[in-house]
Image 1 (cartoon, rainbow, N blue to C red):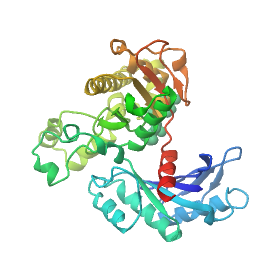
Image 2: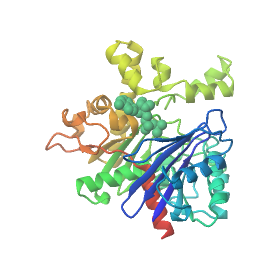
Image 3: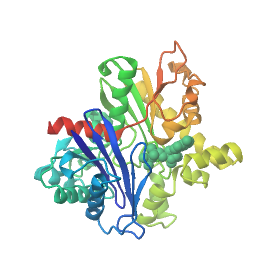
Amino acid sequence: MKILVINCGSSSLKYQLMDMDNEYALAKGIVERIGIEGSILTQKVEGREKYIIKVPMETHKNAIKLVLEALVDETNGVIKSMDEIGAVGHRVVHGGEFYSESVIIDEKVMENIKACVKLAPLHNPANIIGIEACKELMPTTPMVVVFDTAFHQTMPKEAYVYAIPYELYTESSIRRYGFHGTSHKYVASKAAEMLGKDIKDLKIITCHLGNGASITAIKDGKSIETSMGFTPLEGVPMGTRSGNIDPAIVIYMMQELNMSFEEVNDLLNKKSGILGVSGVSSDFRDVEDAADNQGNARAQLALKIFYSQVRKFIGSYAVTMGGVDCIVFTAGLGENSPETREAVCEGLEFIGVKLDKVKNKCRSKAEYLSEAGTKVQVLVIPTEEELMIARDTKTLVS
Ligand code: ADP
């Protein structure tokens, strides 16, 4: 069965066509600048030149139509007709408390995704537009949604209820939801496979470190704590997001610095984190370069803050689980930055972490990083959210 995976953002759309008979990605692509001048589709097929189409794309429906055309294109495509697509899997960011697993899309599911728009106002509307456009263009193809929040629905109450008046949870749905669930779930199951163990017998800490970053504690195969919260702003500092700060800073900025709600929102989400402290960039490559090669003190400080926050979460999750068997690094930074993995693991020897510095030099492939004989296995595992979405889609439609 061939499954199309769609990840729809506000002005971009990523897609993959997976052949699920062998879990192989036939084509991967991205449409950028939807509704903005300069719209562009780039499709990659292994062993071929990139296929690029530059035409105005006013709406997501235009974009998805073009994706389907690119997939069936006589010279650049990978299938003969759209009928070969057996199902579509959509990534949706927020499923609220409605979903702890992926589901087949029907009217009720659409209603619930819409009810979660208030919880993810930047993401769910784009996801909904993508689903609706696909439904119009492929009315008879079954569709599935995979939620970023679903994996974390197993957290115990003490992990997800904030210590604020309880009615804010019961009446306004304010609680920890957690994000990157598909990625944490995938790398945890892959870690168990690499260690040759049942995931139920492992205490795993997964570190998804990309532009957005979150850490999750996984016990008995279930998420029991995660660093992102009501929104993806909580937790460790990220490219442009602050991560945890004293909430009173928000009050102070509004009251004493006369900042508006919009200014505070923009500052915490887009001007903070690694960018805010370093003043250099939100991209870790630039900040590492400034810190290592230019002696930039603020870049060095930004990285130190990041490493120490990630380490703190690892330590606290080891306590929450009563130990740790395995730490997994994934996503752009986790997969590609030996410097980050080494710095984060430094000082964790007392809980049994010892990195093999030679093995740690690897990038972009699954690898065992611990010194032989150490108690805690450190692994790097490239995340494959699209594969996970395709697997869930296949299971549900079969
Ligand atoms: P997103 O959250 O947007 O999916 P990614 O997981 O793709 O992000 O991670 C992107 C980030 O990974 C970049 O901003 C960069 O900071 C970091 N990154 C990627 N490659 C490297 C590298 N070789 N060295 C250091 N950091 C890297």
